[in-house]
Length: 397
Picture 1 (tube, rainbow, N blue to C red):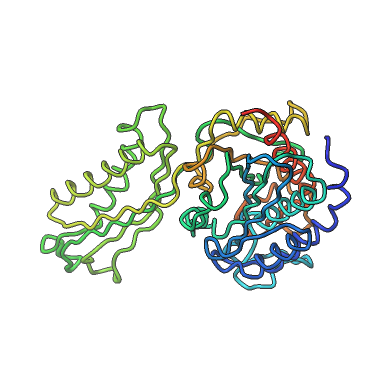
Picture 2 (picture 1 turned 90 degrees about the vertical axis):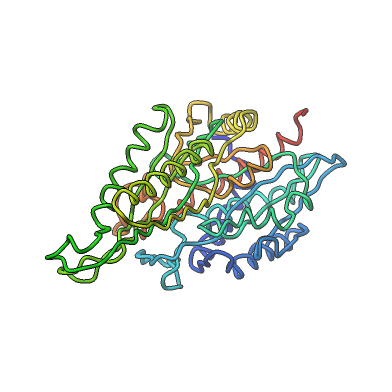
């Protein structure tokens, strides 16, 4: 593994920063303290900053040489609204808030890269360091773009990196094409006619229709999509009734839809709405159908994905660079990839052995109350960012 010596030397400070951020988690668009920490460090290292983009976002600007070329590196800063069960010293100080997805580590890795880039500047061009708020459901990437991210800071391509538990530290993964799914929500309210449960013929019961819809939606996946197209429809909530002897007036279904393409998403939404309306009409019900599109699919451009793989291989060896298996999880870096070429890659977070005993077994997956970012990744991730920027700004377009 070819880590940058100066970054390895700086690793203890990176660890301190990471654990400080972990202990003080902030939710989407409220990352005031975290943004202050980022801004303070960048300023301390002589890096000009721009604040307030996307509410609490921070952009650092590192220039060297005379070239007009530029690259963007992005890290997310927000935490999750969940209770941490870890008891180590840097566990969350905020009840109901936790860095359970490793954004504390992502921020620290990019800060580590920023420190090296500012002190060495072995490149010709500009590196934009994008510290983004509100990835966890707030669409912070979209808001930064709306605030003029790519107009104020023109860049050729933009890159993101996320830790991934379960694989050994020292591994990376990057692939072209869809790597994370679109995230969408639906809410369907069936309006029937309530009545006594002992006399169902006097009512129009929405519950059996809801049950048929839950089953019917799965035929959209198995019979309406091409077998090679991926899609998920999950009904995760059904709310109806208040008493065992009363047929309810209404029944509400909610859930999520995930796809790797907008074309498949269009088909699923249309089929869900048609099935809902026609089935309800057949049984004499009315339906309110709501479908909300959240994050689009995260789709890596092929040249940039291959470029990342080459950079990774130069650091850890080609055998440690894996194919990036697509996941039905979602990521708002997708908005940036809709606007610019780039690649969203994974860095392995280990098998969980970095945690103290008693803080959960196994790889400790993301969004887990016993999760903790593996500090051994910090110098590796920072090295990757530096080598990516240096190599990008040195190669001919």
